[in-house]
Length: 347
Image 1 (cartoon, rainbow, N blue to C red):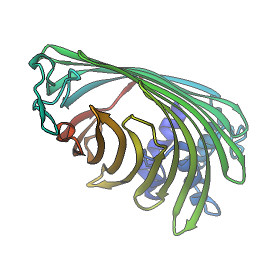
Image 2: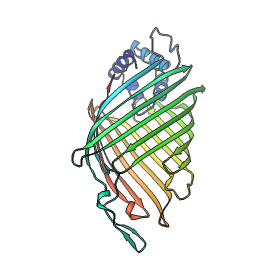
Image 3: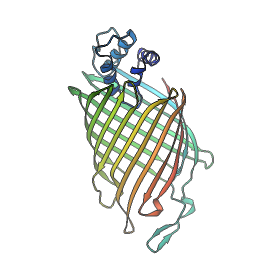
């Protein structure tokens, strides 16, 4: 991201509340650009607003922008580093600390393999970037790694991830995206890799009154350690030039024989500003079925709420709660969500 882009956004955030709301960080760059363009359309604008719109359009692959002499790199890469501070309820990937009861049978696990919980601290680092390949077409990509250590237990976790998306404007604010992602988590007692490939289409539109929307539908092929699954994904994201960001996303998965797998999930997010600090709240519901353990069926219902609030310009507090209600009580959980998120250092 070039320095003019950063400086222009900073100036706009100071001088224009309406357009600042368009730039809500929860929204993707495509929806933010659409909101700014529609908000400024037909209105007298400042030079800074014109520069912002020109830069946003060029970053979306429209080489001429609005015609300003404002050079924007067609390929950008950023390296970032950030501290990690979380409360982790399963640092080692262990088992619940209670007996497993199946019918009239009761099993007690080895204490060596019970889960450990506590505060972990560490560092995350990675690289992300964008490469423009044509008019309204670009590639987004990223690679990240996260290391966290528990002084209490002398245990560490390592997480790595990578993603690549091809984003393409087709016509009349219709878009087609193809993406791939993978994540690997390594803990003392367990390691797992989850990946996915997706193809989706999205439409940007406005319903007036300063509301700008992105509606999407797509298919995803999910790759877990023990199975593969086809999923359908739906999304409706809204950003308002004088108000909150909202998003509703849903996913539906096919039945996978003898494997606990997602059947349906719904999430709702609201992002706004409270006392001049960013506040984001997300509620998630999901249901998984198909699992079997020694002939007993396992179905899980998960509910969670997470709230993130900016304590300072460089630090946010994330708090929440997650519950899992399983037909096999051994897998039922109630746990807090607590973490501190620090602003990333970018190079």
